[in-house]
Structures are given as C-alpha cells and as structure tokens.
Amino acid sequence: MSIHYATATGPVNIATLKYWGKRDKDLNLPTNNSISVTLDQSDLRTLTTASCSSKFEEDQLWINGTTYPLDTPRSIQVLKDLRKLRENVEIQDDSLPKIAQFKLHIISENNFPTAAGLASSAAGFAALISAVAKLYKLPTDNSELSKIARKGSGSACRSLFGGYVAWEMGDREDGEDSKAVLIADRAHWPDMKAAILVVSDMKKDVPSTSGMQLTVQTSDLFQHRIKEVVPKRYVEMKDAILAKDFPKFAELTMKDSNSFHSVCLDSYPPIFYLNDTSKRIIKLINLLNSAAGETIAAYTFDAGPNAVIYYEQKNEKYVLGMLHQFFSHLDGWTDEKFNPASAQILTDFPLDKLEKDVYSQGVSRIILTQVGDGPVETDDVLVDLETGLPKNL
Image (spheres, one colour):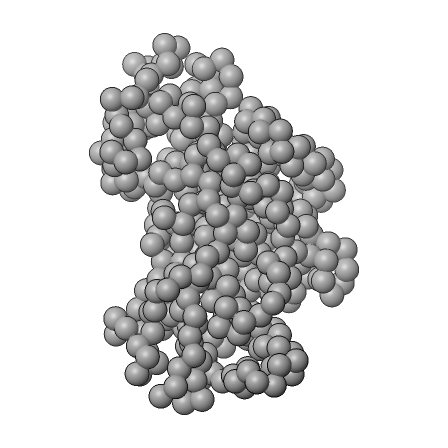
C-alpha cells in the first residue's frame, strides 16, 4: 500500500480576551475579537499524522487510540477546504501526485485530558490542519490556514500561531476577513509563565457551542459586552502585550474572565462553569496581589472550572511559592519546573488565616508551563505504513 503522510503538532492557547458568541454558526464567525497566549508544546500539545492513500475507504480519525467520526459538518468543511487548496496546487504543478481526493487517516495524540476545558479542540484542529497542509504541500500562510481552522473550532484559529495572538472577528458575511493574526511572537515576551490548576478533567456539562447560543439568545449583558466592553479592552490588551506591561495585562485578563462568566451567569437558565474550587483560587490570587502591593498574577477561566494563572518569571518564587503551600501534594511539581527551596511567601499574605484543608481540595493536578511557539513539523510517524492504521492499535 502506497501511503503519503506528514506529521505536525498543534499547541493549546488560553484566551485572555474571551471569544463567546457567534454571528454565524455555520462559518464559526465570532461576535467579538479575542486575544490569547499560546502555551509551550512540551507541556500541552496535540501530535498528528495525516496520511492518505488510494486504498483508504473512508476518512477516519483516531485520538489517543479511540476512533471518532470525521462526518460532522465542521470536519467535512475543513477537509473540503484543504482538498480544494490541494487541487489548486495539483493544477499548477502537473508533476505532483493526484492525492487531493484520496481518503484521509488522521491519527492524533494529546498529552493532556481531552474535553477538560484545556482547549483540546483548538490544539486538535491546529495540528490536523498543519499536518494536512504539510501532506498537501500547501503554500498558504498561517493566517489563511487559520480561516479554515476557525471553521473546525473557533479558538483553533489562534493556535496556528505562537506567542500572543489576536483573532479578528471581521465584518464580511463570507468570513474571509475573520482570521488570526500575530500580535507578538514568543521571543517578544518570553518570560510569561502559566500555572494551570486542573479542577476537573471531566467533560463539561454545557458544551461551549450550545452555551454560546444560549447566552446570545438570553443574556441582557451580552450586547453590552460585545459592543462596549470588548472593543476597548481589545486595544488596551494589545497595547499591554506590546509594552510588556504585566500589571495592565493581568488586570484586563482577570476583568475579562469575570465579564465572560458574568454573561454565562446572566444566561437563562444560567450557565455555571466555575465551581467552589474555582472561586477559592480567585480569592488566593487576589490575596497574593494584595500582599505584593502590585498585580503579579492573573487568573483566567475558560468554559470550565480549570484555572490558568499567568505570571512573569521574576515573580515565580512568590506565585508558585504560594500555590505550593496549598497544592504541593499534586502531580506536576518537578525540580525542572520549580524548586520549592526558591519559594517565598510574602509577609502580608494571610497564610495562617486560610483553612489549608479547604483550599487544598478540588484540584487534581498542576501543569507548569510558559508561552510557546506555534505548530511545528516533526519526523514522528503515528501511522503504520503497511496497514494505514494507528501504530499502537
């Protein structure tokens, strides 16, 4: 069996200015601009091999060894767009093999829980599109590819870039101006770090897509958010990133997380993505910043209870020092990531007034990471080149 294949990775991104709400459900066009930080793929990534052959009978997808359908409207559209680009390449170069209409076998592996609120769909579609683009030898740039990624999963378009990324909502009805653009690469602000507190690795009760629809239809606060709050905050956050102004970046990040969850709560019936553990983490970060006399850490929560804490390398001893007091029992603390001997508890942090047994509950693991790069091509091969099936099956 002659199998063509290519492998690429896709990173997780965590939004600091949230995307919530669609102006076009089919094209996945958002109601507002958004901004995110791409995280290091050594900690959070999807690895995907895309392969095709004249012998494959149907498009198939495997994630961590489990088969998933590739017959959803979103998946069908993404593959249709990629195949159309390949057809154009084949027309321009008659010497290339005619593989555009071959069925695809997509094999992916995540190094983090799927559907746990850790943007698994974003990393997944970014890796899929990057791998197929490599397989098809597409000359398209990442902003153009991001428009295809957007159709698969809205936030996936931002995972086509590393560093600090904006998703411009666009105005056109066909969505051709709704794409991801780079604000600044990782090297611009490399000492941005993140601690992810995994509050739940269970699948969330209200999926993002249905949650957005409910909010758009029922929340009175939603229109105020997209018309008044986000446009101003978008400019301010871009400026803060370019200026490497962490206190301003942190303030805007926390305010936007609060705003996003407020419109979820304002939906009818209300949507609860945060739980009591999430709220305790928010309190810990507020107490830490108060004790520091400045904003040295920022929390943000996507559509789930997991906390992402952003901070700068220079303040790691204080931020992780405080978190280690409560969560030292969790998996994820390693000598390479953090040396407890370097931990410092700020004098004004009220450690003795907090019930450690209470505040230490509800978190299952910690992931220590940092700002990272975008998708990369690799020499890994997840497909068995004789059978076309995953190697580990």
